[in-house]
Image 1 (tube, rainbow, N blue to C red):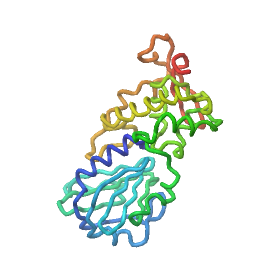
Image 2: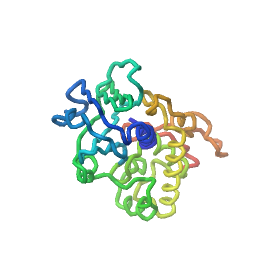
Image 3: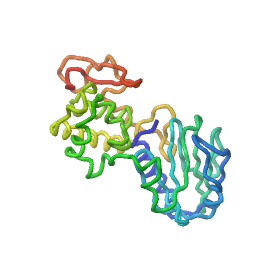
Length: 275
């Protein structure tokens, strides 16, 4: 599933093509993705002018001049690209938006785990999918004091706690593994044992890995592409994710990257460097 850097990269790419444009025609080629589309969604989108594009966690929010907001989630295999009418339709292009400058926005989702929803402007924070999200990791309210307090009662491994979207929004398996490595924190450490010192290192590690990944266009794993169809490149800079058995990078511990399974997900780490 695309994580925060991939969603933010797509948001930025779409904003360049969509902001200020009008939707001439919205075509919904099936009645649902993960859940049914809202009633009369195509009618609401037809003729609407697009404002700003925001992001909350792994969700993209597209403002419309009809006082509505289009909520978009890529799911496991979804991709949203901005091209032209000259490009042929592809299998699984389930939603197609034709804009007034000739740009065609295509939402392709082979597994149909993505979603589109329509929210009344001003009610975004109350939407069931957004209401319980924790702070954005790249914003000021996500700091060591907050993180230490949020983890203080969590009797789960820190890896699992950081994947909890109620604690911090937008993180997924890849970037939690990478951030824990940069922070020198073991994924097996009990979350409640994270004091202010480790929390400070975690905040720094999380922010740095997310910033680097966004600058690289995200990580292309399986289906993900940027809004222009290009691949992301951060997968070439993973320190530990997917590197089980390789020497621990940038470390003189003499050890190798290990893989364990936590809550059904692969965790990659250096047992000597991460404590």
